[in-house]
Length: 198
Image 1 (tube, rainbow, N blue to C red):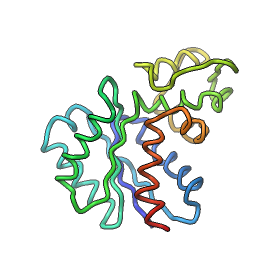
Image 2: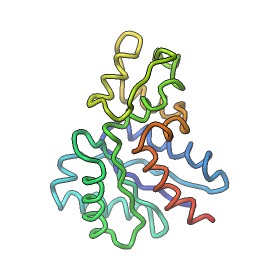
Image 3: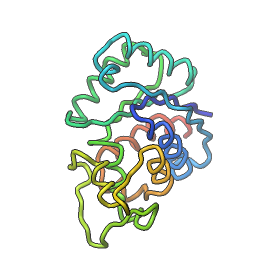
Image 4: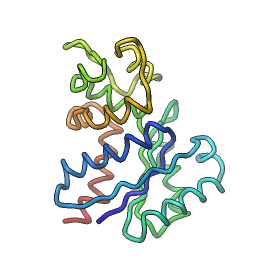
């Protein structure tokens, strides 16, 4: 069994990410048992800019995941370059937990961009609707949550309620095809879960 200790920044991701990781496990490694632990929620700026906070949360994740586990840091890129911020965060984190399997994934620009990448598969769910021929570059909108809100009946989108529900439903193949940052997540999964189980 591979325990996954994740570090996230939002309440929605605390509920949604374990659902998503279990789905990825079923689709990619159905014979492997993974244990997505309750994610550790952090304040993004404090986590990224205060060394002691980064250290404290990483050591907690290392203790939770155990010697054979995997630490996954998943944050929103917002206006930062995902590749540059991801590489720098990985470098700093690796210095704290060099003895652990570690990944840093930055959703570009927000976690909801992965839903936009697979928007057609969410049509009709929880009041979400999208035109059949509507084209959207998933990782361009600065306010992906706002884009989701605009496509919800009544104009309401709740991170806490809708994010886990959509994480359980969106088409992973569509997200993979249309989101570079989602492909990064799958690449890290294959490195730290698939290769270990082969």
